[in-house]
Amino acid sequence: MPEITLIRHAWPEKAGFLLKRENGLETAVFLHFFNSVELLAGGRTVQTRPHACIIYAPGQPQRFLSNTPLTHDWMHIEGDLSELMRENGLDFNTVYYPRGTGFVTDMVREMEREFFSDRRGRKKMLGLMLGEFFIRFSRAVSGDELPAVDSATAERLRHLRGRMLSDLSHPWSVGEMARAAGLSQSRFFAVYRSVYGRSPADDLICARIDAAKNALEFGTESIAEIAESLGYNNISHFTRQFHAVSGTTPLKYRKEKR
Image (cartoon, rainbow, N blue to C red):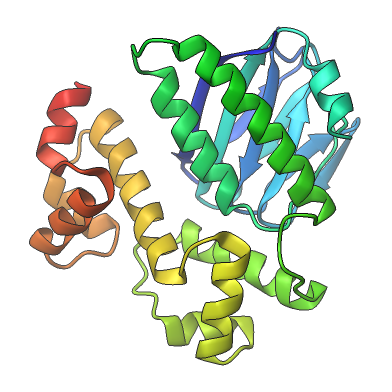
């Protein structure tokens, strides 16, 4: 039975980050890139659009380069994944652009939380969650899960979301987002929510808090510095939003994780 051995959601890296594994890993690797990357897929290098996904087979060479600040979801999966892939009509080493990727980060976040917990039935629960993830991913790839959005609008939304999540310090407004997507504010709000499962403002807040969590857990910056780097001019505002999303304060989160 396939088993997750390592997993992270919304993981950040600096511009110029290069991953190169000539012989791959012993595990399969799932990757979801929020921004465009130069990616090795099927033996050739391609420049992806934002929100590309790939599942590398065990032992398959892996390579990607991000010329801009990188954010990505990833997980390593041990065991025979071929049956799960076959059941869901998926191929290894193939670039996919699922329609709507909000669920990808949401589910990877939930699986990460379960993975690092010590709760009863953790291993079985992760197996069930992984199975659900592949079903939903397959549906999103085929377009079965989401309301119809014309391809041009979907492409503009993907591009916009990639820009947003790669530049979290920018003071994005719904008006600016809507203009970038070529839609009225009301239409943009409705379409964005239908595709990504949450409002554009909530999506941006969750992305900022995810980035803050990574910085609090692995970085050395002060809470004030982290807040400022994510576009918060008021640390009290940052603390309130952090608590609303995560259920704890930035200081308590850092203490618990360390």
